[in-house]
Image (cartoon, rainbow, N blue to C red; front, side, top):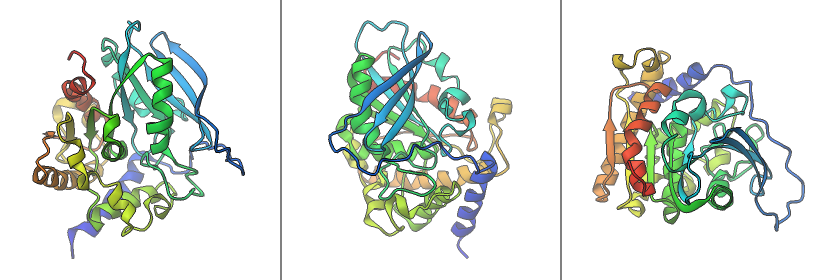
Length: 333
């Protein structure tokens, strides 16, 4: 018997065990029956938390509902500046009742980015949506058109309201890592760099697709509504490994753990017992991605480190990836 069916099953069970109850669904406003084709994305409100942090609510015509994003700003806001977009993991805000991103709730990103001359934009929500445009509205997960929102609707609003200069880097962790890399290969002109932490970046094999689809199912969604059945060509269209050559020459940083805890991180380096299994699956997927990127002659900075599938390591990854991010954004390190 292949090791993959068991590994995938354990990984999916691990997602449930690590995140607890699946009974909380992201609040989704009912979509109108008739969509105005001439609707435009617009800022509905800006709620400052501090002078350098705000929650911005944007109406998305693509998703036909308001979407909240967390924005971090530098203390010096006179000059135009680049923007870092960071995508969340599979629960996308659930732990804070969708009041903030996992990035601001689980890491030291607010402090770490305080002296950096960039905007940081983090969507709040997107549970199990992989930050992509779904083929169909899902009865549980709702209408997901995240790719359109993140690439067409949101960036012009951020640049206009927060003095952006149009230079962007995108990144994410776990689900958000695949989402970020998939968006980047589909919109290479929009991003100067990509960072991906603990994400399965090669969706070319049935085993990796099964793992991704199963993660959607753990949150009550029907994965066929995303990119269709596992053999559908849309899976190929969204597979970063199959199109990585379009990002050749851009700064890229990919990290993944070896499935073993790093004692130096203490409590922050722990996870549920299945955190190692999850990261082990992602490790194999990352090696597959690297083989394909190497074959295409695309240079990527890899960090094959110790660690589990948990926030303590992703916080560390953010710090380690900063030189790559800074290069993409064109700012000092």
